Image (spheres, rainbow, N blue to C red):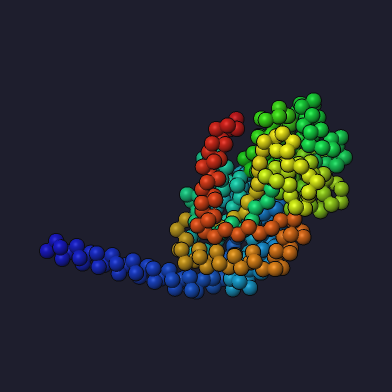
Length: 323
């Protein structure tokens, strides 16, 4: 009797499983039937916002529906990130993740949401962090910048894209290694940092170049150093911090993620659509000419590993630099 009951229970379990898988397959075939929302947890005008808007110009072509951007800044990116983590796992609400609120905040402070709370869809691209200053200031090289900051403790005003964001982490590393000090002012993304620069409210930052590029070309701002592994193709004359004796590397990535529990077929459909967007010639040209970046697509599995490895590394980073 028990054996018969177990067989019946097992048969029922298999039927339910097949029914769920079949339902998910139908969902994926029909998905999307309405516009998809991409939440950017940072202010408009930053590198994530600009990159997303460029990529999504061809979203409808490859997904069948437009993807609408909603900027939801605050809390170093935690507010928008947590909102997406709590959204329905149906593929219609996605997050444009970044190292600050997707990796460092959860790894170091236990707030915001990290890789345990999302399903990775894809990595779109990443870009090297650059040290940028106002051109009207007395330092013209990275070493002069460091010397001035050490000789004038607390007078340098340094803007960041958020607490524990890339620019904040970069500064923690640089200041620890060199002894330079500054008044650090956090903003809700790259857009507000640009406004602060143009209003002469800050002297320096370290961030992705995209939102600053136009002002670098006009001469308002100056790049002093790259925090990359090697010199950047667009800026072959700009040395890396490592070349100058400061062993700091820093980059900023932009990845798409869905709430935990989003059906795998929907994740795969989204990942394929984004892959096609990043391969679109018009997108590649726009990203290169306007922002000086390239696309670096990684699918769900590859992105998951990339993100997890960084998350674990930032736990160790927090032990060194947390105040």
